[in-house]
Length: 372
Length: 188
Image (cartoon, rainbow over all chains, first blue to last red; front, side, top):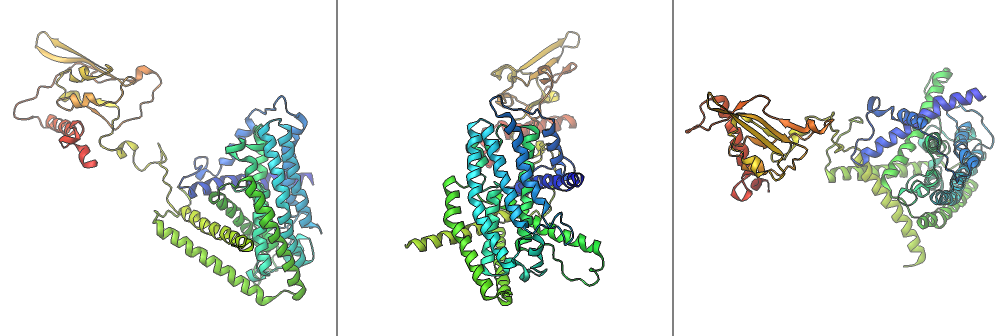
């Protein structure tokens, strides 16, 4: 078990978090008309290795006034809170570490460990910026856990199970079979979940715990070297976890179209399922980068009012709506799903229209190559 | 406006403005970055992209320098030192040294304006980094170079004539004030 965990962490999670960090910097740079890191390895794809090695070689500084035990423990608590979610992430119909019957509840529970770690880091650093960052983070995560939990609950209502595999099996490969289009309420719940998950992951625009302009670096101010790396490892890895959970709950998970002849080849089927799941999940990682490049950081009071005044009532509304929907149509409303799917397509078409307008309107010099 | 209307409006505004903002940022993703990857990944060196009147490191074309010392005299910080010797047998005057200390030079351009032939001028070169200050002193006369004497009725040697033309062109474009029809007039 220990060996398997080591292999998973070093072969899958570490490159995933690393390459996400590189890709985020590239995408972000391109959205700001810059280039981003492109020197280490082909197009800078090894930048994360260089950064990791640099951080490993740095001196590990513990402030004299710090609570040394808590200070050195905190990064690992944060890291455990993030890495433990990989236990129940279903990468394929067979590819899951443990299909717990309380899967989604388990995820909500272990991600709460991150708050403990961040509070420990903020408190033990014995520094006012760290403490403020830690307190803000705790307030934020505790608040946003409610809309996130409620939107997850809508799906649990529909499926009647908390197991990740059961949730996926309740959906189909076609978009109108996804829970995203199950009813108008789950459609809204998806966006509530994604927003709340971004806030829980301390991502921009909800990154007030590490707001550079106010708090230096928040709870990581006093950290250096390896311990600093662990915080950011967890942050970037967490992006993928957000995408994976959103995919599982709302976007049909690993379902692939019923191509004839593929059911007999378990390996090809498994690889295809993994690929579909990975791409869907990574799409939301990209969206998170894109949101980061778009929205400015919110103020603390705006953050709280967004959560308590808007997202919590809306999440309750979604919950009630889904409950009613399930009562009226226990097997789901096929026509309703297809209508929701068409509305989704219309929104996407509208978006593409606005995108084309922006490109036409500003007449930029188009450069579609991903490399420069 | 009722409280409920305001509340719903707030939600609608949040959703639509984020929608529009996301379209704008995604349209930026397909733009060409404006970054110039100096110094190694450029289509042509920066020196060639600079404007004509850019005041880079000074250069001297000793072949058309008359040795009038106007530049040495006009230099406000005396970064130009010129030595002229006369060969007693041939009565030929020549430069023993012509040094410009780039450390001191403040790129005011007075020397280039004072030069009658346009032999001292600002180049487009700006990369002057070196390991010690002595390396920044530019020696233009490594061996004695005879002084240039302008001939009446124009230069006959085609090689020298070209250099004279280059110097004159530089004088016209750089050293002539804008009010007198210098190159700055058309740029402005």
